[in-house]
Every structure is written in C-alpha cells, then in structure tokens.
Image (cartoon, rainbow, N blue to C red; front, side):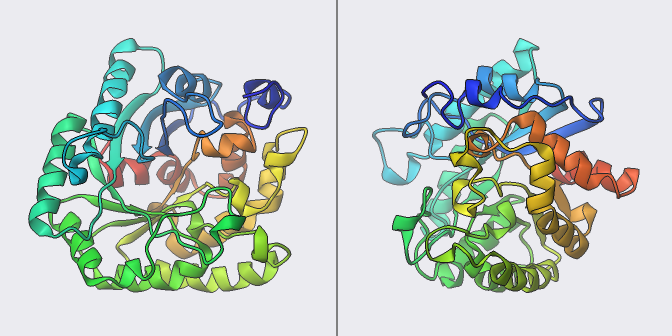
Length: 338
C-alpha cells in the first residue's frame, strides 16, 4: 500500500488521539486476518497486535470468516476448513506469545444449504481444525441488484434467507450450540427479520447494522434510507434470538467518503455522522444484546483503531457502568463463549 494511501499506516498516523478510559476491558468480536486481499497487504498477528495494542485494553478478539487460507484441493465442501486451521495457528501464537490480545473465537464459513449429513461433516471438521475456537458460521446474505457500484459486493444468492434448505442449516447450527453470523444490505433487513422468526432456536448475529448503503443509486438518500432502516431495526429487535454488532459503518459502501480523504476520520466525526445508528440500535435491542465491533482491517480504510474505540466510549458515556460493560465485553463473551 502506497505511502499516505487511505488505510496505510502513514495515512492513519496523521490522526493521533489519546485513548479514552484506557483501562476498560474490551472484547473485539469482529476482525479479519489474511495474507493478502486485492490491493491490501497482509493483516496477520503483528498487524492485529499493533492495532489492539495502540492504547485501548483489548484483551480478546473473535475472528470472522473472510475466505482466508482455504484449501486448494480436496472435496469442495471441505475447502473452507483450511481457514479454521489458518486461524488456529495464529490464535495459538496469540496465546503463547504474550504480546497482545488473544484470538479467542473463530466463526467460519460453509454453505448452509448443503444438507444435514454433509453440513454436520463440515461443522465437525471446522471444529476439529479450529482447536477449540469454533463458535459458528457466517454464510452472508449480502446481495444488491447493482454490485458494480460497490467496493465490496456481496456474494449472497437471491432469496437466500427464505430458502428452505438454508433455514434448515441455520436451525441445525442452533441445535448444535453454534451461532449464525450474517452480513447483508439495508434493503434486506425485512428478509432477515423473517429468517430470525423462522429459526427461534438459533442465536443470530446481525453484523454492521445491516449495512446502510450510501453509494451508487443510494447516494444522496441517507435520510430516507435511515428512516426505513430505523423501522426495520426495531422489527428485527423484536426477535429475542438476534443480537447486534455495533460497527462496520466506515466501509466505503456506507458512503461517508472517509476512505477517499487526505486525512482519516477522527472519533468526533464518527460520533457526529453515525451516532444516531448506534443510539437507535441500542435503544431497540438493549445493551445486553449489543456488542461494539471494529470490523478491522476493513474499516481501517477510514479511521485508526484508537479513534474507533474512542468514538464507542463517547457514545457509551450516557449509559450505566453495567450497560457499558455489556457492550464492550459481556455480550460478546456470552454470545461467543470467550
């Protein structure tokens, strides 16, 4: 990554903030690792520790699938097991190295439509390869009619959330004690609510607020989209089996434009531009069903890690100590058993 290019360390270093409330224990329940990704360089344990150790007390993290480390041969349905082995090795180093946050959970990927017998085989293989870290599956539903306008177009299939085999797979996760993570776009929120009602025995984790889009045909419609999004989030929150991750709004497709600036965003800018999404979701779900998430290194294209957590602490300031503890630690610890 070129010097001063958005996301580069030199670019991020232009904004330096002192950590707020630096002793507060934090679980970061959403980050990725990879050897390379498009024009991204590697993001491995050293890079993760540089972020988590930059001033906030991030003690544990949860890795979320990003198609890293897949096997290049063998049965197609078992190739994603390579990601579990890839992360398990890095997680072991995080425990034994003593240099920073511990990777304490792993959420992998597989196609949940493949039928119970084969799905059980994959889940068992994922669990074995993850060496005690396996917590669940993310088979994301993100799909938009105009993927060419998106920097990170989803791979979800049309009608995925309503698919009977998919719902059976999500239900099986719950029976086996695993979680289901998802990622989709704001116009898919009603479909996700229907899924949640159909599988009440599975804990569903809503990533990134349902990704309100702000680019392409959605540019210039932020307030109208927000109004519909508010109603949809309130409906999703009526499903007691859903918990919400609070973060991931600094991706390029959210349309805030911070990834195209000469300077990264700071914590005050995040609170001003995005605070209403956080406050509404916390109001609907309650702090006991919310967890702050960094979504790094993806959101690294917009702001530094320290600035993200400072913003969360500014948003959380109006809540009780018990409510803050839930959002920074307790909800993630309960849902992902870390």
